[in-house]
Length: 480
Image (tube, rainbow, N blue to C red; front, top):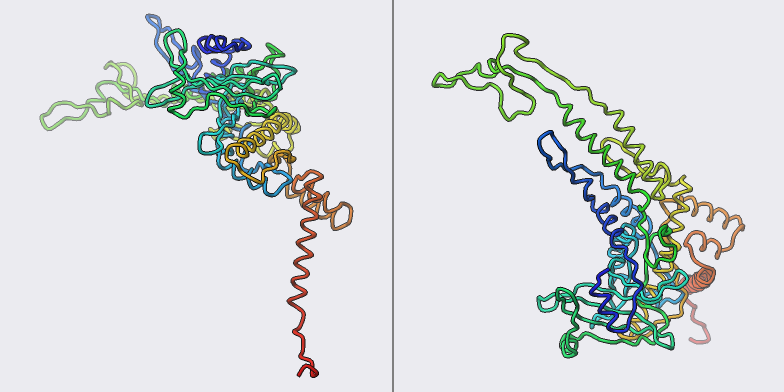
């Protein structure tokens, strides 16, 4: 947490919950980037002095977070509501804020750094959304596991100059949210707010009274308990308990590389053998390339063979077993079950054939979905609120029921679900509504509305076909 930001907020009569998680964030960030201080860059003493060394990394922390993000928030995730016109607005807004791309990216970083935020706002022209990680968040009010008031600090460049941009989301005495925006210039020790004219010149809204009891920010985080502080407003990295496993994995992987490097074939050649050829002037020249790593020149002597080949034995099977063991430990500690990753042909792959049978991973996935579903639903409501009040979009129903259908095709056999549901429906074992609930993941109200709509369309289609099939009426002789 930046002390200058905390001091500035205090000058505005805003007190934040001062919990220093900087050291945790630094460690999680370093593991996520695959470059941990003192581990991936280290020194080795060689008798006279220490030399710098770099340890290779499989970068499994990033892989773990990426896999969770792809499982939880991909292009197959659907956000639905029970009003057609509002649904069209939702689809447009999700595309407008690039939700499926940036949301996936944020979820990956949030699982690494412990948390992230969706923040809805009006950018002066359209409804927009910010995606930031929890390192820029300053909690103000946290009650019963819910973050209700907070501030966000980030950098903003205006006219080529960088400013510190602070926004606070607090509630007034009536419980309605008020958003205050502050733009500050940074000095060595403090933040100085720009004059009011600067806000007007650059069309920055200083205060926005939302008239809403629903916040325009939502937190996403792994559903992992904070072991250090149960009532902490900050989330915990999904790999917080697996850093020792990452360390062991990179040690084995680095040693694997060195096994090949040190186990290369060597050919020791005496000087006399390497200078058997002569150039056009009669001078002796080397037969072997001096830069070739296979050949090593030895001093000339009468003893020993002139050329000696040395082949090292590589312990490939031992290293393969060691790497697979470490990957199993990582998979288990990060919620994928004991066999989520597979070391094969020099690559780490996801053991997809095991995922569909892995009950531990299924439970962990559903646990993460609980928090993500709430955040996405409230995010959509925030976008609808901004669109209705700023873009003046008509036809939006803010009180609609919103559902999130996650992509469970990796866990569930969707083809089998459809086949079984169709079979049960044809045998009159389930209703149309239950078929829609199972196959299309609709809730009760949506399933009933969908069944009515389908019945209406089928009736209209039958009436249209009936009109087209009726023969033209023959003229009556009396009419002639």
